[in-house]
Image (cartoon, rainbow over all chains, first blue to last red; front, side, top):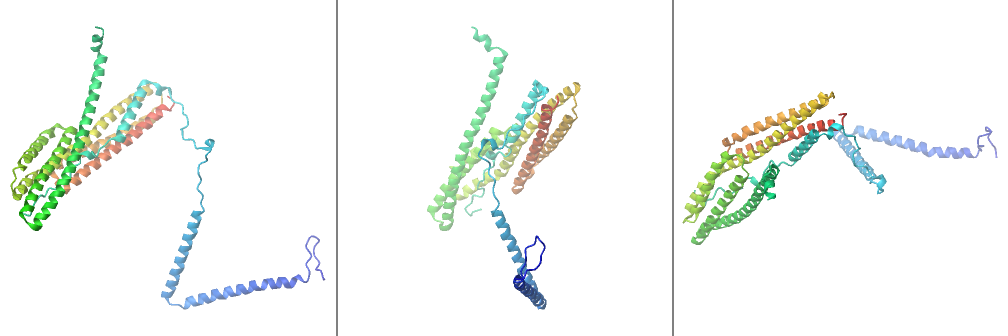
Length: 149
Length: 264
């Protein structure tokens, strides 16, 4: 077996391996040629069509593209995982507000009175009933007749 | 002997006064609830009688027999009484909640008209008479509707008015607090800003309230569908006034929080 000279670190390549390389490249070339001819033929066919056919083909292509987007999006949404809170107490979110120091002035009677009055008015404002549903005027028949009037 | 002097003390009198106010408020609420439940039953009764009336009327118009005529007359008599009961019940509810005494005379007039109407129903001898009697009440219904809408809108406006007055008191309290802080050498620019904003909202609410009052006074000019849309417009304006007060209160809360958690 004839051995090709190579650098010390390279793997020796034998002469017998050459045809294998050539064989493996042939189908790729054929496929490329076939693809190219298919594209060329398609383009030439498309250019020969009337504008209505072109429009139809374009519409079909567009809808197929939309369908593809829809399928791809739905698959992506399905694969989205929902993160649930951890059952461990230490990992639960903290809902209480951070403690803040209150001013000395807020402990005085006038301020506390003001704050209480504000809370009362807020509560009244939030629950005030302006509609007075109970006092809606009743719906009554105001056209009692027997065909005489 | 030792108990009697205590009963004359100012604290005792104050406690009795507060208890009486509480009892009065509770009894008015309970009276309204009782009246309202009775009104609902009356309304149900009216619906039944109305169904009977429609059925017997249809038979009379279709067959025209003496029997169907008598049935129709009996049904329409019951309907007229039931309808008058519903209207009387509604007027009673209005009277319980009404805060404007200027409507009392009108309410009494309508109530006496309905009582008179009911007393005359039993004397009806023909369908023609029943139609005439019904028409007398039907002519009064638009007027009753206007009074009813005016009273209800007036109640809602009164609630906004009460809130506005309390808001003004809050503004005064806040003004005093800010003044005290300023006198003690504290920076109060932020608090003054919040107060100005809150006052601005209160003034907007006042404008809306004034607009609602004007519209309520002009309700007499509305009839039929126009009355309904005018009333809905008043409700909308009152809701806007309430919303302005709510926003003003939010500014007041900011003012309060800035003092509470600030360097004061």
